[in-house]
Image 1 (cartoon, one colour):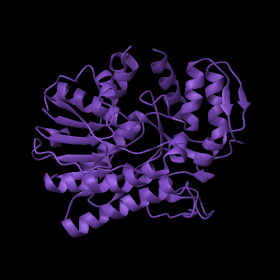
Image 2: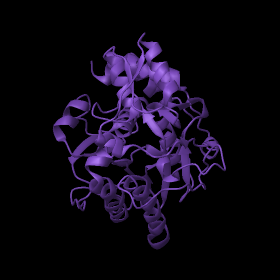
Image 3: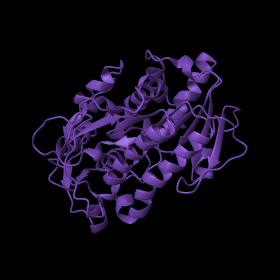
Length: 351
């Protein structure tokens, strides 16, 4: 079953549509989305295409991605729509298109986002977050974008120094920058700094949604994050494999809440500001997350030593909980706690 045809998935989209957001800002507008086939980008695309139906927005999406065949399968339902254009593209290359006029909103969502990618493609991890960001900002400037959004990460906060329980947007924890694994958080930090430079030097309107560990039915099957591995095991009806002591205490966000938060930031956020997208009801230790998923399918949690590649890509942070008070001030509120989000993900992916 195509995701868009699953009743639970459609309800997730409708939940976003029901939010008190100024959808009129998308009327007759255009969005350019890098990373359109990823976890966040694909759900966002589905939401906007649904909004087009409900509100007759005529909002056009330019969807960027590296794999056209994958896009044709994922977006088969809208691939021939006049409001959807897929463009094969590697964000590390300059993006010059004479056939595209002004674009109203540019969202840079493309990034390596899981441990094996960090470990096997550390150069690509960094360049996508820095060079790719600059390419998107240059395109946005040349095409007179009203606003840009740079999808940042909870990883920019580094390790909790033990002085706070929750990270607000001004927190800055420890990162050992002289390591391979630092490439992801440091390049996200640099991407944010680059956004501020473009705001100052070119007077661009840019906002920075900071996503936390996101999951959901749009997850990629090659994603090696722990939660993604747990979900794949659950779908297969197998024991959940834990590859650490599981005491890491993190924030998680169901994809519908993450995309809803992204839209709140895009449509209501203040220029130059960063916003945490997270919900305290979904903060959980990794071992407890594993147990919740195992219990939901009647299986057990087993321990396994990770291989060298996986281990090299793991986050070194042991506690990273995000404070979303600032985003809630815009009117956003999470709709799914961790147990609900996990159950929906498994149900949808099982078909």
